[in-house]
Length: 309
Figure (cartoon, rainbow, N blue to C red):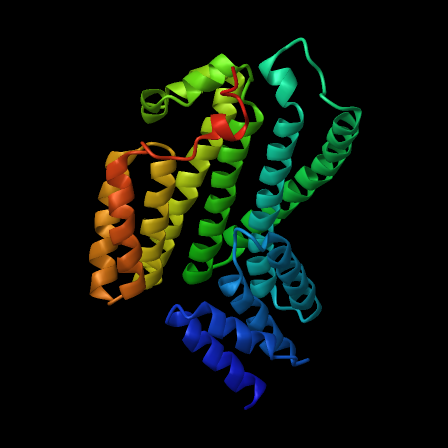
């Protein structure tokens, strides 16, 4: 079987949702043909686990950028830049989470500093790593936005604008965690269902921070809305249905349930029209989650140990 045939079979497995089979075939491809290699790297981004394999995904995106740059493939270069930006944001979120854990004692009891000297040293080291990462994220995101705005290809613009929306969604969540002003009582209040349900936890942040968080939320929505329009212009109904679904998921995160239900209904109609069975399964599952209205989300207060007496 040729390398191209392996790639084609891997794509077929992926389309059927058979990710382990697709991955096994992709791992067998060792071609030096840059066109095939770029497609293999793009396929890997679809089959690798976006929760547990972020480092691998980042390595794939980085290789893709380097190869696309060497071969003058600007479209694929911008595509991999967009993916790299998203994976970098995932790394930043993990760093922020770790920083919060290292300062746990001080946030619960203001008179306590770091619980251990090694925690203080790790916090300082992470701080330096974070500064470099934030600079890289900002420059990468700027390049992705520039590439998307320059392109006249509606399909490509739709995919890139969706990626930018994802980046701002990650930034929204990271900032909410990063700027959470500790103390176990504030944290307990923020975790109450009615407070979360009506977005009242935003008033636990200062005005400047609220505006910063709201800006990320609004940009996320705006870029996804633009992506939907681009896919409509490109007459790509499958991509448009997926983007409607993805925006509905984001709106659930922002507690905008009414609009999320509306967009989910539109996604369902469109997915049915093009027989997108896997997407329809996702929509059915999400309809049940949406009815829950965030009653059963992760308990971050307990995870951070802020419910301790």
